[in-house]
Figure 1 (tube, one colour):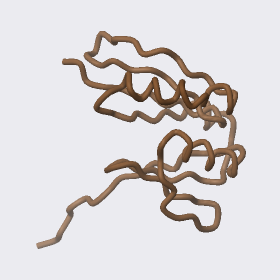
Figure 2 (tube, rainbow, N blue to C red):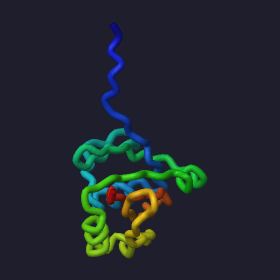
Figure 3 (tube, rainbow, N blue to C red):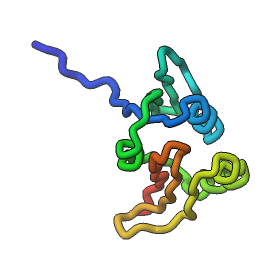
Length: 122
């Protein structure tokens, strides 16, 4: 019988300025595990993605990542205290309770990729 077990799923996140985006993701808490030929592998706990040295404005503006965390307010405080929005000139919204049962906030990365960082509240 064939083994069709899925092991992992990763998104390829675009980067307008690859070096800047690598620093950004390290500064927000991800660890860069490897890098080769314009693709960097980032991980945090059981979550990971691939940052690619590739950028098309229409692609980046329509790219969304969703990170589910245990404490969204702690994440928000950490990003505020670290001055991420000011240092990288990116948008960092305040957390709000959503009608779909999550508390979340939005963070735009330096390339315009939207991150929704969320916690289940139901």
